[in-house]
Image 1 (spheres, rainbow, N blue to C red):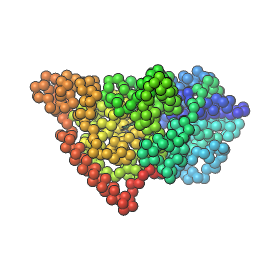
Image 2 (image 1 turned 180 degrees about the horizontal axis):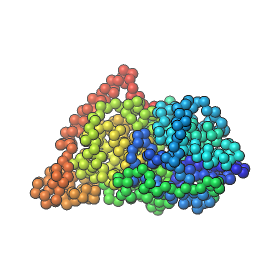
Image 3 (image 1 turned 135 degrees about the vertical axis):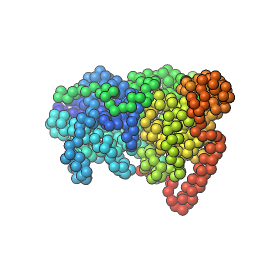
Image 4 (image 1 turned 180 degrees about the vertical axis):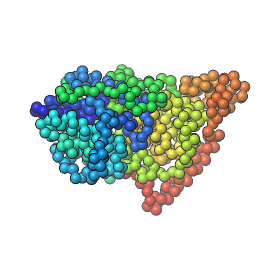
Length: 572
Ligand code: FAD
C-alpha cells in the first residue's frame, strides 16, 4: 500500500480475529500502520436501541470482556491494540453543533472507489439522527482530524474499513458517520457485510418484488437456491502496529461507564472470542451427533443447565462468526450422516435456527418502522392496553405466576433465557394475559438480554403477540401447564424464586391453591411473601383476549379489503 498509508477498522460487531474479512484484507494490504478503533457512546454505552435505556451489567460486561480479549489478541499479532474513544471526551463546540444542522448534501464526495457502494437505503433516512449518532460521528471526526490525518501524506491514504449494518439504528449511526466524519475528511472507505450468511440484497433479489418472503418456508427455498455461504477467511496472523504517534488506550473500566451495575451480573456468559470458540467446540465440534440431531421444540425452557447452544451472545457481538457456526454445523451433519445418523432439518435444526436469524434480519432490513406498530406495514394494529403497574409486575417477576416470574427473574439476573421461556413470557405480556403492547416487552428484553439484537428481538415479539408473521392467536401458552411438561417438580422455579422453594410439587405452579396451613408451613404465604396473581383466571382472561384479537383481525381485514394498510413486507 505504499508508505504512509494508514488503515482504520471501525469495530462494532466483529470482535474477533477469525473470519474477519476487513481485518484479513488489512493484513493482506500491508499498510504502514493500523488503528483498530472502537467508539463508546458515553451516555448509553453498548446500547443499540432507539431510546436511551440503561443497559444492564450482563450485556455491558459481556461486551467489555470481549473488547478486552480482542485488545489482547490484537497485540499478540503485532498490532498496538485497541484505541477506544468515549464520546464524552469529544464534546462538540457551539459552532460544530450549528454545523450539524446544516444540509449535508453540500459536502463533496471526495472519497474514492468503494464509497459509492455504501448507500444504505432510503428507509434509514426516515429517522433523524439521535444525539448519540451525532456524538459518535463527532468523536470519529475529531479523532481523524486531530490524531490521524496529520500523520498521512494526504486524506486518501487513510482507509477506513467498517461493516455494513442491516439493522436500522446501526445503519443510521453509520450513515451519520459517513456524512459527518468520513466524507468531509476525504478518507477512503471500504464497506463489508459480515454479520449474516449472505448479503440481505441477495435474498431480496430472489424474492418477489424486492420484498421478504411471507413465510419461513419460502425463505428457506431462497436460501437453498443460493450457493452455500462463503468459506471463512483465515484468522489473521500479523497486523501492522499503530502509527507511532497514536497510543493504544486499552478498554476503559466498566465501573467508570454509565452502566446499571445492579441489574444483571449472574455472569453465566463470559465474553470474548476464545470463550465463544470454546462454546462452539463444546456444543458443535466435539458433539456432532447432538448438534446434527438437535430439534428446538424438544429442548426445555426450564432446564437448569441450558439445553441449547447458548451461542447467541457470541453470534450477536461477533465473537463467533455466523459463517463459522454454519460451516461447523455442516461438518457435524456430514459426520453424523456418515455414521448412519439421521440429521434434523429446518425449521427445528440448528441450521434452521441460523436461517431464522437470517429471515428475521431480512424483515428488519426491509420493513420500515420495524420496532413499532404504527407505520409498520407488516404489523396488525391492535388496541393494546396501557397499564404501567401490570407492565412493572411482569418486568419485576411479580405476576404471581411462578413459571413466568422465574423466567423474568432469570432474565434480570443472567440476561439470558431459553427460547421457549421467551415465548412464554412474551405471550403472557401480550395476547395471552396482560394485553400490553409487544413494543413494551421488546424494550425490556433489549435492555436486559445479553444477546439483545434489534432485528431478532422485534421480529420475535411481533410473532409472539400475533402482530405479524404468526397468526394463530387461539393457540396460547398456559403460564401453569406449559412449564410442568418439562419440569414437573418445579426445580427451575425453586432456583429462581427461593421463597417458593419449600412448596410441594403439587402446588408449586399454582401456590394460591395451597391450603393456608401448607402456605404457612412452607414459610411463604401468597399475598404476603409472594404476590397475588395479577390475573385471577388465566383461562378466562386468555379467552377474552382471543375475542379482542378476533375483533382486531376483523378490522384489519376490512381495512385491507377497502385498500387500507396491512400489506406484506415493506420492500426495499
Ligand atoms: P440455539 O437454539 O442454540 O440457536 C443457535 C443460534 O441461532 C442462536 O445463537 C441465534 O443466533 C439463532 N437463533 C436461535 N433461535 C432463533 C430465533 N427464534 N430467531 C432468530 N435467531 C435465532 N435472539 C437473539 O439473539 N437476540 C434477541 O434479542 C432475541 N430476542 C427474542 C425475543 C423473543 C420474544 C423470542 C421469542 C426470541 C428471541 N430471540 C432472540 C431468539 C432466540 O430465543 C435466541 O436466539 C435463542 O434462545 C438463543 O439461545 P441459543 O444461542 O442457545 O440458541
